[in-house]
Length: 277
Picture (cartoon, rainbow, N blue to C red):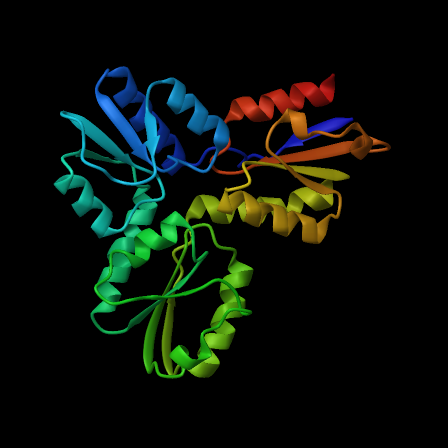
């Protein structure tokens, strides 16, 4: 059985940067904690916890000389203000690509209504919306269009969550263009996401079976799985080698592997070794 690992598999720049920033702080022996998950991968979260970085869910008064790490997904302005008032020194590990979306959205808000194409409850989307003075409209899919709100808008600017699929963006824009007279799309999907999504359209065609590797909470991994599954029904979303099932591989000659942007290489290597064994 031949194993083909996608060239774009694994960590993106923003994830690697956030993890390295966190580990550097842990090694400095300073008191530090992380607000939520640094990235959406359970292995990485456990690794940082073992390094001494405690995860907190909400901001409380800080112990003296404490630092608070903001995850790669970013956070609303209000979170930064609360952290400062609570006494934390802030270490901002927000992905630079996400920060670019902040700048674009703030600039566009001056002259138009902001619509965000993205997952309503995802931290990145909350962070984008939380940069704005006025409430943004978040749309996940064509099935969830707030028609009453949209019909009142005359001019809108649309930004996208960095891990959205182009197909979902195009479908939503086609509907929005029917409703809003003056609407402009600013496609803010990051380049790494686009590369991964292009490669995952080829991987299922070139292999008998595809493994998508990543944690259940990872938005970009979910997109990769959806794209691959639509092309090759023998696509399985797994988190670690423990999720592998021998029955999947009967009469399978080629296996393609694609890891999400927050999945460490060591996990892929363990899966590869398990398949070879």
